[in-house]
Image (cartoon, rainbow, N blue to C red):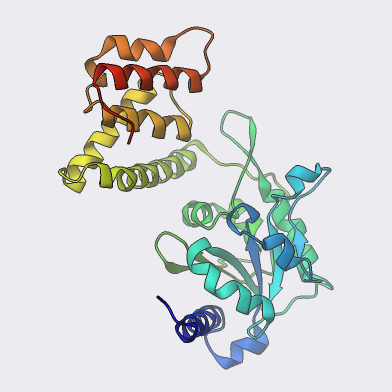
Length: 301
């Protein structure tokens, strides 16, 4: 069991790690300023913590109801020696974080200007002409997007005064750095082309497969990691063939397929339950689980 002294040492180490990642030398502490952008969905207690920060802003534009306003990203000024830095540091490893750095600026209130600039990136235009919400403030998504962003897209996140974006990737457990390539402001809407959408989708899908494989590993100790991942991919493909697309439904289906011993592909009676008319997906899954428990005489894990 960790002792209080151990916890204090770990927190002090986290604080020093965050400071050294953003301000690499003492000179930078006076010349380089940072704002941290946080996703409330990934940061429990964020509302209460930022309530006392005078330079904390919600990043959204236009009218919005209270429920959606509560989950909008926040940005706040970060200093090398501040209470917010101390609170943030031990949590970054688990939740990740996006940090925008600048040197000198003529902006009277750079935090307000940053919030306005980034709010425009919340809405993205897709190749088919539709618009969608873009959770760029999720560190994983931004790490996928920035390396393939074109000049206009980069301008959404750098403008003409942000010099440096540093992101702590919560899965890789490492810092990613994206320096500004040029000073450029854009008034064009943020668009994502088909190739970028496909590349980001592929990365997201691979993360999902790995996460699902890890989730099922305790239930399948006799299978090698490679064999289990193979079977998970087959189950996901079968689910998609039958119109299952949401993440929660995919997870539920793969677990049921595992319980059947991966026998569903050849079981027409079972798969027919996924096409029961006038039934929601949750009802279909319940019918399928009941069928599997009876047919294969195996209990839910």
